[in-house]
Amino acid sequence: MGITPYRSTRVSGSYSFSDNRFRSADEQLQGESLRDNSIPGLPDHRFSIRLEASMYGFRPALQAERVSSYYVNSLNTVKNDAYTVADLRISHTGISGKGFTILPFFQVSNLADVRYNSSVIINAANNRYFEPAAGRTFQAGFNIIWAGD
Image (cartoon, rainbow, N blue to C red):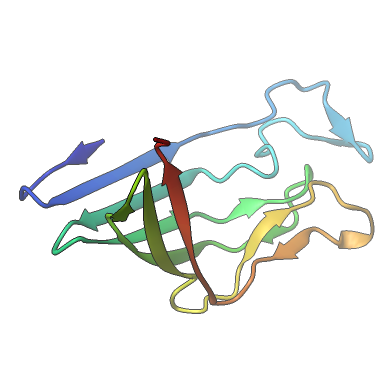
């Protein structure tokens, strides 16, 4: 969903809720029933929001995502912590030449340098479930649109 509160800005976001559980009494692991356990790897709540603007040829965008905690094993004994991360991107609408346009950008990912796990290995051996995300990172670059002659 997105709205445009002002001509040069746009706000968009999404929210998802899931209640994923083992439903069958027949599903077992290590002799324990999994009935009504959460299915591992699936957060119940995920929310994201993005604010974009366009001014003087620049396009700043701020994006944030919140993910609730979730189990990483079928027995529901280990959880991945909830986290919130934000990214900032500034791009330019383009520098045009003969038959081409250069679109430069600069981005800071994980703006607040949050420590979190970006992914997990479900039911991992030796309790090695967690794959940490990178800390704050910086990227800069450009895209080239070639229109030809």
